Each structure stands twice: as C-alpha cells, then as structure tokens.
Amino acid sequence: MTAAGQQLHGSALPELTWSRFPQQWTLDVPALALVVLAAGLYAWGVLRLRRRGESWSAARTAVFALLGLGTVVFATMSALAVYDRVLFWPAAVQNILLDLVAPLGLALGDPLSLACRALPARSAARLRTAATGRLLRLLTFPLVSSVLVLLSELCVYFTPYFETALRHDALHQLMYLHLLLAGSLFVLPLLTREELLPRWCSHPVRAALVFLDGLIDALPGIVVMTSGTLIAGTWYAQHAPAWAPAPHRDQQLGGGAMLTIAELVGLPFILTVFLQWARTERARTAELDRRLDGELVPVAPQPAAPTAEQPAPAELVRPWWETDTGAIGERMRRRTPAE
Image: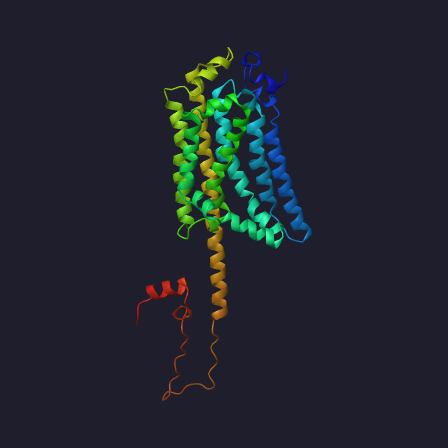
C-alpha cells in the first residue's frame, strides 16, 4: 500500500520517528501542479530578462525555489502529509508552514516585479493595475492583513472547517491554498510591493508591524496548546494508530510546534526589514552626496593682494539648503538659527 493510501488507515502506518520521517513521502497532485506552474512561470520570466540582456538576482531565484516552493512541497508531500490524518501535530506543522514560511520565501523571490519586467508593456500595466486595486490594498493594509492571518488560523482549528477538510480532499486542498494566500497578504507588501502600503508606513513602522505580527502569530499556537477542547477530536479518535500519543498530548505537541515556528520565522522577517531599511538609507545618503557635490560653488581667486586700507571682501557662498525646496532643506532651515 502506498503512503497516500495509508493515510486513512492509521494502523497500517509505522510509528513516526526521526529516522522514518525522511523516508515517508506521498504525491499531492494539485500541490505539485501548483508548484510546477509557479516554477515554470518564474523560470520563463528570468529567461526572458536574460535574453534581453537584463539581470535578475540569483539569490531571489534561490529563495523563491527553496524557501517558497520547497516549503510547499515539504508541507504537502513529506511525512507531514502522510501522517496528517492520523496525528494532529503533523497537520498543525503543515498549516503553519503554508501560512508563514512559504509566503516569506515566495515574497522574497518578488515574482510580481519579475512579471512586470518580463511581460509586454500592456500586460505589465494591467498587472500593476490589478496589484494596486482597491480590494488588494484593503486586504494588504497594515494590521488588516495580520488580523486576517490570525482569523484564518483560529477559523481552521475552532470551527468545523479543519475536521471537514480531513474528511474531504477537495476542501483540504482549498484549505492549503487559503492559508498560503492569507500569509502572502501580509508578507508581500512589507517586503516587495511598497506601493500597496500607505505613505506613513515607513521602514521603522514596518519593523514595528513585523514585531507586532510576530506576537499575533504566536497566539494560535498558544491557544491550541492550552485549549481543553480537542480539535477534530472525533476524527483523530477514530483514525489514531495504537502507537499515537494521547490526544491532548498530540494537540500540545502541535500547538508547541506552531508557536516555535512562528517565533523562528519572526527573526529573519524582521532582519529582512532592517536590511531593506539600511539599504534605503544608504541610497538616500549617496543621492544627497551627489547633490552636494554638484552644488559646490568654486571660489574665484583674488586678482590682487589686499592692502591695509582696503581689506579683502569676505567671499560669501549661500548654503545649498537655504534655497532647497525639499524635505532635507526644510529640515536644515529649521535646525539652523536665524542670524
């Protein structure tokens, strides 16, 4: 019997151990089709840019493939998928990987920017219009997207949604897609699509939002781990193998795994925001230096040495910020006292 066929027969599955975990795999056709389609479109975009003599970051490609699509494959086809219908904790790890880790990898790959550069001008314009539409801007608005992620997790575990998905494969696949999209709504604008964010959402504000989101993401794991109500208890009572841990212990393991992964994901997320912040500040500093170099006024040499009766007139050069109309000039005028 294949691993996929064994999922509904817990007694036929061997005990899940660390040594057996890498050996257990199953084929998830819809998930594989999604991964192949996404990988193919991404590769097409990269090749199209290279044929035009343009470059695309190899690091972004690697992160998209390994952390993004690789996490989708691992969550839906590894031992987590083999055992998710007989043990709660593999299902919990699956869901948190699709909700938090995979969206982070996909967003860092920046597929929308790649598509806008690779597509013809008209198609790229349509994509930009769709990506900045009112509905998407509302769903990606700071805190709104965080609340959507939180509600998605709570809805999965504390409504009949999860147990029904265990009974019906089509709904199970829909749940995977739902979690992946919900996580992407928060990650995508903060890391790659700044036009989806309001103007006040500067890099310091983004860092604060990521920190707050880390606290919010920890809540589902804490609630699952400490809940006295069994999640999908009827289903797991019927399908749990003899070697399975007690139902409450199984749920505690799942909640603890959710909490751990959520906190681990928060660290690279906030580091990425800080790196983008530092890169932006370096670019602004370099631009300011270029402006200053262009505005330096050379002082002409004096034609003759001054005499005691006629001292040399002082060479006056107005500071550039006195006439600058930008934000930097305004800030300098406020800081400099009037003479």
